[in-house]
Amino acid sequence: MNFARLFLLVIIGVSPAALGEPLLSNGVIARVNEAIITKKDLNNRVAPDIDFLQRQYSSDVSVFNQKLQALGERHLKELVEEQLILHEFTTAGFVLPESYIEDLVSKDIKTYGDRLTLTKTLQAQGLNFERYRERVRKNAVIREMRRQNVPQDPLISPHKIELHYLGNRDKFKVEDQVKMRMIVIPNRFDAQGVSSKTMAGEIVAKLKEGVPFAELARIYSQSSQSSEGGDWGWVERSVLRSDLAEQAFALKPGELSDVISASDGSYIMLVEGFRAAHIKSLTEVREEIETTLKDEERDRLHEKWIKKLEEKSLIRYY
Image (cartoon, rainbow, N blue to C red):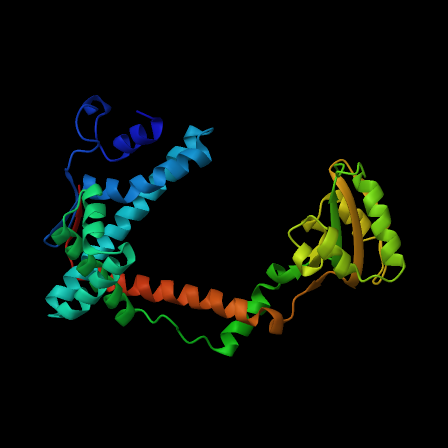
């Protein structure tokens, strides 16, 4: 057993000695009113993320354990919240039309092609069709209850946006920038034995004769920006490799570089503009700030709603 699964056993209270048994015993770890949350419920939530965590932090067991612990706590919190929401739905006497559930199931069937294919997929996940239908219903209830109680597009006043901007101006600092185009010729010989440096020199000669940079970039450049005529847009010094940054920021707007030789190839730059380091204006960042504040407001309203549900519920952890 790998250490990821072993640690998961430990944090949720299962002895590694029971490795011959299923991964987790199904003991109760929490109760929310009449509903129970089991170790298996938590394992089902955490398990899909374990491989990712192990790939990311396999070299540091301590950090991996911290991340896994936090992941388990977050998923347990989500499981509790879901039970609070489901309980509120039931006790308030709400009803979700069967036709609505049928529509959701039909959409899934279309996604998988037909009902038989969906059924086989569910069987591979250890689910029968009825359990799957109940899961669809539960998710639909939670989704609808959240939509009813937490506005998805909360109103953020212009004044609040301005206050956020004034209080966080350092976050909107921008380094010196150049607007540039670049042609990249990999450091290899072509079929005729022409080196990248030689080819780049020929391209520079054509540029000096007046051939448009964008046109030659589309033909010769071997970078992801070639289809856009080698256009990098506005870039900060930190975006570029140090050797390329030194060359780019030494050029004046409208200037073309000579061939820049490097171990991996040859480069040609055209600088089209320069902007000194500055703080972005409120106009530039207004939409970004509004999105941030809307996310924060949704989180605040969600936590406020869940707190109300908690206050009128019985929650116990084991």
